[in-house]
Length: 283
Image: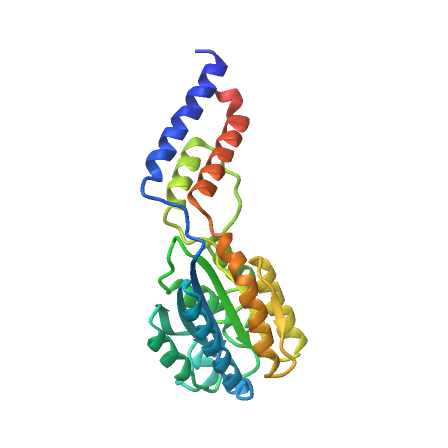
């Protein structure tokens, strides 16, 4: 068998494998959205929390009227109770897993309350890594999260050891230890493609720093930009309304960017190209 025949045999075989691995996977709907609000509920948010709750409720009303297939989740964060000596505190808490029930979402918004939170930095990273990971994301939906808080992340976090880089990797690749190893072996390509059918796709993060603190702004900007999202700063509580409106206008782009069946096929075929390129001498 000559080299050209071998190449076509490999390509044909991989395409056949790909078709079997993606049976039942359909294109993502552009009208589906899973959106998580990640909210700092420490005592220092006292001047902003009412506005935050009001704006989340207003956004819920707009979503409900739009006819979009949406679900909302709420994750709160404070600090480790071992650090604050207040055992009402927590690293993160899922107040509401994804729901499309208007009344349940509205009740959860109203129930958001403030605790202590101890010193300045908070467990932002635990909320983004463990809090969001515990939610029941839909594989076919566009995925976004809005982080709102007035203090930077503990980085690295005590107890967990989480870093900003780990949080970004988790949001983008669903893997805190992600590294692009560029492994284009046949076994790696086929196994990775199979896992793509079920793996959580990228969560795009938008952030709102509710204080003008430079450390908070820098922290939130790094987190948002690392996922392809945007960061905003609210100079006052009243600014939050306009910022959330701006984020709402951008979120449909996130939904449209959700990976579809054909995106997966194209990505897979590109890996076939790299496989042939790097394995040419072994054929």
